[in-house]
Length: 214
Image (cartoon, rainbow, N blue to C red; front, side):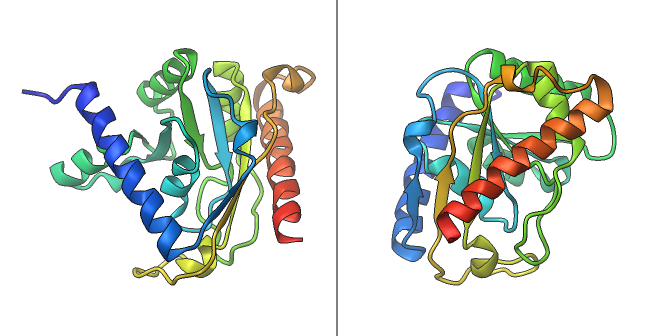
């Protein structure tokens, strides 16, 4: 018998509480700008990506549950499928139009949920910000979504790509003022517009980086 969404929501809360304790004790984390994130309403949480630590960090800094977009290839077994469902992963197949995942994400945002995405598309190899890919622009446009920019500092030093055991490096998370969908109204249609939307989001993330890293 399939487990209910209510079960996975309760499991998410367990993971959320556990992560918060671990991040506070091990990484001495600091969270800034939580007041910029609305307590209700759907949106995309746009986060820089330099470590496998970023997905849980982006969400557990907030007082409300979120969902996050991740590679379908991460789900390698029934066990990993269960673990990722408990953390609200929405798997998407890279390199092709995964219409099922797109519809689910748009539906989640329309129903008032926050979905975490990485505009850069993949982890940074050296911790620097990379250019935004068109993908997040596609979701913003089709979901008519507001966007919450977020910058996480320290995760590349704590757990760079290829490492297994994280180092106890101080981590800071900054949530910026929400970007309303109306602010993208002047963007071109189609792929050029998707690229412009993504670039604007990365500009806001870069501004948060300058703010918390000086």
